[in-house]
Image (cartoon, rainbow, N blue to C red; front, top):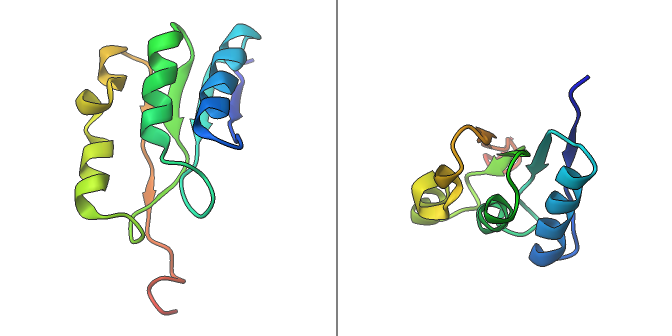
Length: 104
């Protein structure tokens, strides 16, 4: 069975450490979410990619309406984050627009 884990930490360093620990105990994938109280996932994934070798990395949801378009583009540019330097380890990126922001 293949197992992944959703990482939530009180700060960026704790989240990166949790990804490193998840790889150490055998999880095959680690996911981060962005929004409200969570930190920007891209620097965390980049730091984790540099300190791990096997765990697959990905984002669960990135709310696009609350991010500046340039910040979103930079985050999705895997080369700029360093994640692209870990071939085959990016699970994917999921962006979402929330109906709450759209006035529904």
